[in-house]
Picture 1 (tube, one colour):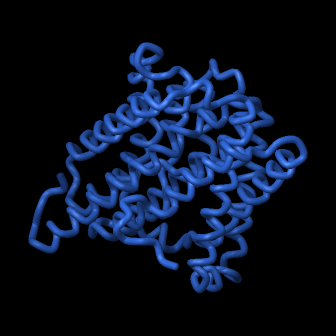
Picture 2 (cartoon, helix red, strand yellow; picture 1 turned 135 degrees about the vertical axis):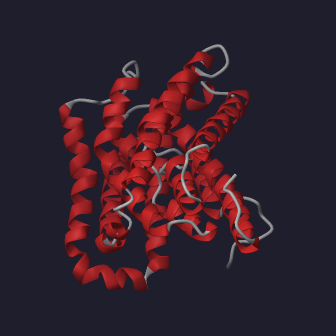
Amino acid sequence: MSWPRWLPVDPYVAAMVATIAVASILPARGTAATAAGWATTAAVALLFFLYGARISPREALDGASHWRLHLVVLLTTFALFPAYGLLLGLLSPSVLDPDLYQGLLFLCAVPSTVQSAIALTSIAGGNVPAAIFSASFSSIVGIALTPLLVGAMMSDVGDASLSPAAFADIALRLLLPFVVGQLLRPWIGAAMKRRKKLLTLVDRGSILLVVYTAFSASVVGGIWGRVAVPDLLILLAVEVVLLAAVLGTLAALPFGRDDKVAIAFCGSTKSAAAGLPMATVLFSGPAAGLLILPLIIFHQLQLVTGTVLARRWAMRRAAGPARVT
């Protein structure tokens, strides 16, 4: 069965919402929670192994020479986003729920997405080789930078684990599988390309398992008694402002049209595939669900916004020379 085209929601996001609903009704408890935790650890390792096996060093290096573009993307992801996030602290707690604000800070520390950024850049007719390098490099660098930013910005989160052991745990769970995938790529890379649909299901299934495990712990801890619908609507409005501010800043930079497209999609997106697994390592207890909720909402927002912009820019490109606005 194919996803009905008339539905405005991406099927992956719909699956995330359904997963949260299932976790809210049937959360994993006791032995089931322990089993779900081990399954999540294995699924995340598999996820990063597959990333390593699929990312082609040659394709990435084709766009490596454009260092100004890559520097802008890195600064946007790991400096501009956190700066705007800290500025939004003026809204907490008077307007924005303090727990959700902490999740917003975590969102600002997460690396940029890989697959979506590259796909949207391609649709819009942007600099795809540069997007491949920037998005991939951001994801790898984020394994080290994201925990450091979390430690700097979220020091008052009681359930955060930011000890040297936590960094070693991240390297073991995320970086090591990625490196192994890269090393085995010459032998399994061709098979990966032939099984893209199956690998996409594995990718998304892994993330859904992470979401279910985190929200199960949060539901058991009483998450829905701590956050109301108006709080979520305010969070959505704040994230719209955040995304608009980042895109507006990037649009003002003096780059050519194709480079601006790559910068926009690599710099303004945040990776649920990288961020959610990191959250399982950095945070524990009932707070985890609230801390990942802003990232899940932002994921939907960036998909909708990115798709609209990519199609708009593609149409303008087909019509003739145009600016990226």
